[in-house]
Image (cartoon, rainbow, N blue to C red; front, side, top):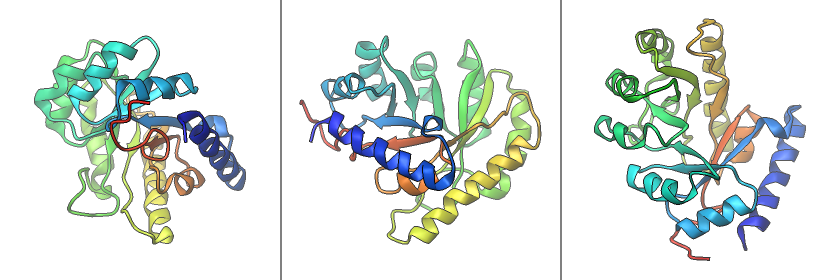
Length: 228
C-alpha cells in the first residue's frame, strides 16, 4: 500500500478518535518517522500531504534535511548525545528527547534562537527507556529557567509495547496530567502545549488521551529502506 492510502486510513482513525474524545482532528500533528526508509520514501510522504518528518539519528536527519529542507519540518525524536547537538541544532525545529540538564546546557549554548524542546518522560518506569521520572518533571522544568534558548513546548513519552490497552492508556493519561502541572506553573519559557505520544501500534489511544503529536513509522512509511 502506498503512503497516500495509508495516510487516508490514519486520518480516518484520528477523526474517529477525536470524535470520541470531543477534540478537533486539526489538533493532531502526524510526524512521519522516516528513520528506516529512504529519502525517496520520505519524499513520497511529503507529496501525500505530510509536513513533519521525524529522525532519531543525527546522520539520518542530515541526509534527509539536505534534500527536503524546503518542504518539511524536521523533528529529532531519538536519544540525543550532547556531542551531537551541534549537528542538528539549526536543522531540527523540535527536539523530543530533552531529559537531562547537561543536554539542556549544550542546546542552549549551540542554539541561535529559542529551541522547541519536549521533555522526555519515562512514565512507564521501564529500565530500557530513556527519560526522567514523572516525579522529577516539575523540578526539571524549574531548573530550565537558566537556559534562555530553550522553549519547553511540551512533553514526550513512549508507552510499553504491550497488548494491555488499559496500561497504555494510563501512561498517556499520566503524561497529560503532568502537562497540566507544568502549564499551571505559568512559565513563559514552558507553555507545554504539545503532547508527543503514540506510535504505529497505539496512536489511536494516544489521540483519545490528548496527543497533539503522533509519531508514525511502520503504519505510514514502512520500516525498511523502501525505494518506492
